[in-house]
Length: 287
Image (tube, rainbow, N blue to C red):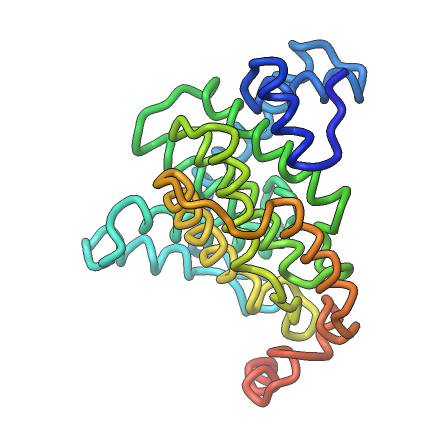
């Protein structure tokens, strides 16, 4: 049986059965949800193709109903095309795709919650950019999606993925951790490197509040997708260089749960704390 509740258990299953992380997650999905191998694969492939479709169909002319979101993805695109982004082509694309996906969500376009709608830009930004850069097959990307899903499952079970429960660390933080682990896998990382990329990424997001201006998942949420995606890339590179988290991956997840439970309600998606109650936010609303 391929059941796991912690990243340590996932790592042990990989090592004991001499499998890759994605194979253990795939098998677990089949056992827990009664799917065949073909059904499991098709479901994951369809989600990844939906991410690619959403990225391709971004429309920079659209504005959200509040008029506060839309067009920034096109701005960073033009900046990248002009070769002004000192971060380089890959990171520039990651930043761009994350913003675009977040704006598409605000404009009611079709996106994939990964793991939530508010954090929908992080994982596709990293994965699609990597596929484009290194010309990988969709099959390889599906394997990376399984890795991300396995990480997300553990976080959801032991902490939270909803901003209303744990703050933005639960949304952007979880998405960043999932993307970091998936990227480490794509770079041929070991299971140890994958879980360390996860830990390094999530550690950097601990304590992040969920403070949407006037309660809408637009400001500062959309831009946080970009930060979370770049954080994932950074964390994966540290792990691939052999750097390990001093705090175990499961302890990091447990810390996120404790921190989230300690947060006052006003900092958890209520729009009554943090950036949401600043003078700037009120003036922004008046516009």
